[in-house]
Image (cartoon, rainbow, N blue to C red; front, side):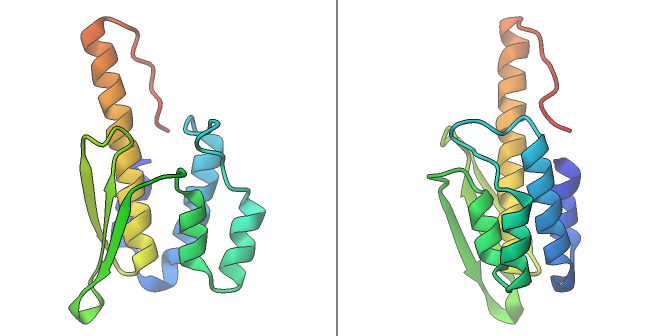
Length: 133
């Protein structure tokens, strides 16, 4: 997940569909799928991407109730802010497009959540299995 986050930050606008497809596959196969985070089928993502609905594809991958804010500044500087699930952290990411910025911030938030859980398990003596791929 960390690699995807960095790839989103470094990607050019013409690469955003590739990053969205990668994210859909990663979120489908990863440990983040549950009743509150149903994975979006890759076919649905492909349909959205084929008709130019990149932002919709990214929004469909977010957990319901995800708190976020998008902004586009001068010279197309795109920023996204995502609040982590527990509300304890705020993640800000920049991207070449709004979709890349939001995807990067969302994935960074997931990474932060996983790291928080791992740290809690470590301090409580529970086994710390890796949740990230």
